[in-house]
Image (spheres, rainbow, N blue to C red):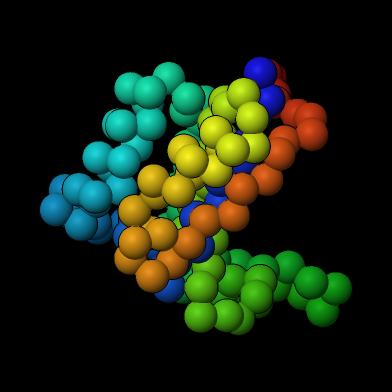
Length: 115
């Protein structure tokens, strides 16, 4: 079955190092719903933008690679039989209703690397 990456765009990540259960209630509920649907294969929540480091030829800088009003707050991988199904699943992400959004990308190749 095809796999799709869903990149979550928001003003910042809700997953601060000191985030409370209340801070994470909405994204965690969405993650549980995706897991229960059996479409979810992997999920990663990123910490807020101020903790990012970017590397360019000139060296390392603090902050996200692109200075924009939105950043990638997290990513998850889903199984979906078609693009329409993937878009339907991704469209349930809470950031869509909260003013952010998601980007859906068909995964070409890759997987977990075992050491």
